[in-house]
Length: 199
Image 1 (cartoon, rainbow, N blue to C red):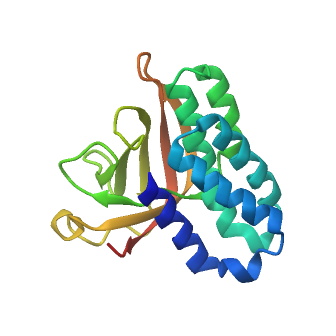
Image 2 (cartoon, helix red, strand yellow):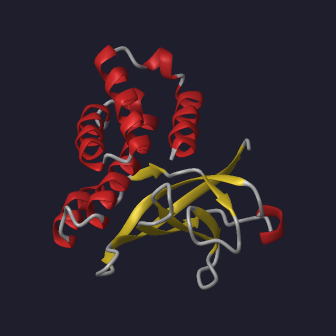
């Protein structure tokens, strides 16, 4: 989880010039509090904080990158509450449905073709699509199965992707809730892009 928070934060900072675009001290302080609680996996706090921060950032063009990251952190937090059965499937779906059609920056994950826990690999059934199995830090909870279809295709082979950390972006296109014992989201993203991150 620490790697997730750190990489996502650094990635957003590097793209947006964070210190130059954020002028509200309250936003910055609350964003840091959100990251600290994501690391602790306190989903009740992170669900509220990410929602509040997103409501602030969403209408501001200069916070576009932050909003894309916050949308994903909000889904991740709702997924944590869903998996812990603190939210019903219906309520969890209701919470994230407004994000349909919105672009997001997703969690940076390692490409590993033989892994299904907190990693990414090529989907076997969908052309030019990455599949990610997203879990809690310990790998004991399933949060989501995510499919990101890359708009310009994936140019590298599986062998070339192996062992690389990948940052995915995409527009949330379809949302489903699955599972009884371990309820989780199944998310489909279109218009995806990807890039490699430093290890």
